[in-house]
Length: 251
Image (cartoon, rainbow, N blue to C red; front, side, top):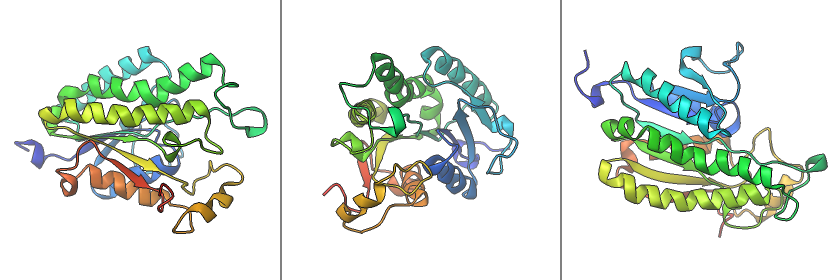
């Protein structure tokens, strides 16, 4: 039987795993032998695109603080059987409401209810999960990766005001978490993707390629590799960083 954390299979909890960056991250970590527990508003699909069972999927509405707290208790219970260890928490779930015909929702047009829902999923859920699973992360000397966005540092042509400001706040939260979790042996970093080629790209995204020094969109796999880097010993002295993954678009 394994006697310490290093002998055990590593475990990651990932929110927003169903498509794009989340799906690529599941595949990257699974290929490296990690157990990946996924969170979604939906039940485990029978035609799940990755090799995992429903025992590694958790149905939770991150827009509800109460349901998020319930999920934390359930996750802790599942982890108890493997020593109460959580080696990585990846906060990838994010929502960005659109107006009619997919129009961008600015600061004036976004209803207050949408502001609340976006911040609950994009900002409050990550800290609730980290707080609630602090002991499991500490035992494993684990890592937290918050997925921010290039939209958090500028007014984006497609991402709405609530989304952009929530991601900006998440970047600030990453710094605060790095300072507070660091003494526990837990590193907290962020990745900030730019224009990534996924199924949810907004019409007109191809025009932004002209503004990207590498003259192309990024791939979900490139983002997943960066997340993996931040969850392994290769980044053992990286804490409180926000890693830009945008082909140089931010410059």
